[in-house]
Image 1 (cartoon, one colour):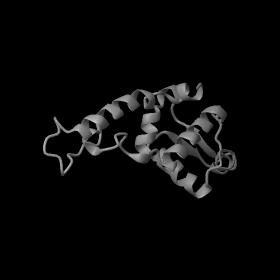
Image 2 (cartoon, one colour; image 1 turned 30 degrees about the horizontal axis):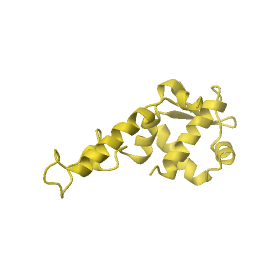
Image 3 (spheres, rainbow, N blue to C red; image 1 turned 120 degrees about the vertical axis):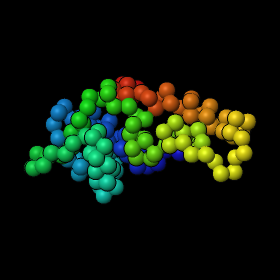
Image 4 (tube, helix red, strand yellow; image 1 turned 45 degrees about the vertical axis):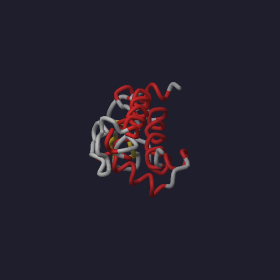
Length: 136
């Protein structure tokens, strides 16, 4: 299941896509308009800033601005930054692979095959850019 942090991160970036126009938007305004708890949002914004998805601008007209164009930011990037792996079990993760302790043979494991198929079905959807998501 997608965490609230990831959902709020996506909502925040979509808000900046729709309303930013290269103008900084305050965290307070984002929180109010997107109905996101302010303290929760501050942590998400810090994390997105650290991963160079957005930048902060100081001052009375300060706030947050996307660094890249929305067509260059993939939903999968945001989810991985905030939640980690896309795969629901570690043995099918492309970027965070870990062998399952109880598994004796990954090649014949039916659970692994099922969740690998699920990850492969989800990835094309998560690989949409924010530009594409904005137009849904």
